[in-house]
Image: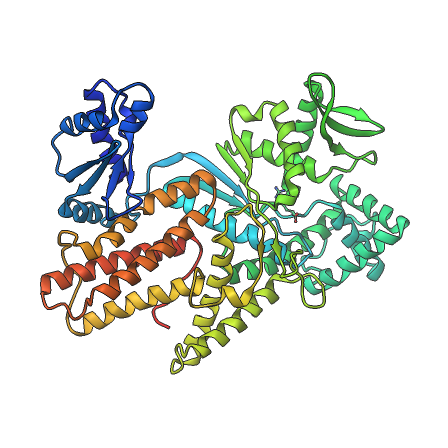
Amino acid sequence: MLTTIEHDLSQLFGQAFEANDLSFDFGATVRCSRPELGDFQCNGAMAAAKQGAGNPFVTAEKVVAALPDNDIIKNVEIVRPGFINVFLHSDYLATKLKSFSNDHTFGCAEDLSDTKVMIDFGGPNVAKSMHVGHLRTAIIGDALQRIFRFKGYNVVSDAHLGDWGTQMGMLIEGLKKRQPDLPYFDENYTGPYPEESPVTIQDLETIYPEESGLCKSDDAAAEKARQATLELQNGREGYRALWKHFVEVSIATLKRDYGELGVTFDLWKGESDADPFIPKVLAELEEKNISIKDQGALIVPFLDEEGEKLMPPLILRKSDGAVMYGTTDLATLYERVHDDKANIVLYVVDGRQQQHFKQVFAAADLMGMEQSTVYEHTYFGTVNGKDGKPFKTRSGGVMKLHDLIQMAKDEARKKLAESNFGVDFEEAEKEDIAHKVAISTLKFADLRNFRIKDYIFDLEKFSEFEGKTGPYLLMQVARIKSILRKAADINAQPGELLPTSDNEKALTFKLLEFNGALDKTIEKRAPHFLCEHLYNLAQDFSSFYQKQHILKEPDELKRASLLKLSSICLAQMEIGLELLGIETLERM
Ligand code: ARG
């Protein structure tokens, strides 16, 4: 990994503090908050004074005198009470940028392949179409898997399909009512079962809401669904065969929807895959006296030392014997810890499931799983409508993900037409642009907020070409591409970077901050740090371009250097957007 300027300077100043018998750590150097005062500043002399080092101005002078020889610092200014402002050599900046940009990861990647990170996101449910509630987990989870992978981690993503709960029993009972003669329901039938699915996704999407509505009002129906779920879980062959069809037709549709968003998973496992691990987990919980029987159910109570209840218990088995959402999650975690040997497991799941994960993780802690693996609920806030309540369709229904994407596309087409973008392009290209603009709109609007915050879904605002939006960034990328194309037309190519001039400084510094933004994103599992960086980068490019007429630059070497700087900026924006799952455009 290449080192940042902050790092290089902090080393130099650290050594200078040490030479004065003060702690190396006082050498920490950061970007100057006011660029007119300097490029970087070291405030260690004041910190040292607080710890009894005496007059900070005097300390600063001594530290500066003790700075090792280097080709980084051009000059320093000491300002009362003891700030050390640092100005850098312009060729050091250019060289630094050159070394970063020569690396295809901008010097970010490290060999972290020994660290296995499993990311559980998506979590769609069999037979239910994806809705707005599945948007954030897909977008954030996908960005995180891309970013962790780029950094060099060994990443495995898993969709963790909801395929083992009572909704499966509802589907079985619902179908039984409609087609009682199917062999799946005949207990004396010994197979083989038909290869072809007796239902389509549309069938499932009709059966499920009807049955789940019925089960809410009709206890006998609910009991039947529970019973069918239990029999499925216990391995009744006809039900298992039928269930397989349910899962397969659902996955086909889910893949289409995720495909539209450009989101992929390494594994398409589900709650049901935890099944073989459940006996092991239950046995261990019993052996270690972690689980108890409570009114026929099997639970893990959570008590403090005084025996006070810390939170509601985790229910492992209901009194009828069926396992629960928490049981499959605990068993899945067990598999990830013991079989997959994951070092980190991230659950990119709605914040409204915090209690659930607290219970699952607390049970896992009691089993000692935390000793080998870190597991976290990387949760996110709610997408709200303008009324501040969870986002719905106009008629108050659940907004399907597919419809939401169509809405974003319509808005993109409208905004593109209003801005006169691509009016004379072929229809196919226009469609491609509308699609990419729409996806960038949804993704950037989501990712730019710190994930734990709720946000208000305002499609019109998100689709603007001005402001902190996806379309703005796509437009900036297309603009740099257009500059480079125009340059190529007059035979001007990017060349060697010359020492950084004042006009280029802000942009150069920004480009060099990419690593920091990415590391922060990884540390906090929060892509908004990367969004913020890319937005600022786009703005810095704009100001640079305003001051600097690249194509009119008469000095050819200088022009080649400016084009190089532009192309580095383009490369970084494209890499950054790709890490957010946003595809860019050649022109618009
Ligand atoms: N299927 C669940 C739901 O729709 C989300 C699953 C999240 N992942 C997990 N390991 N619990 O709420």
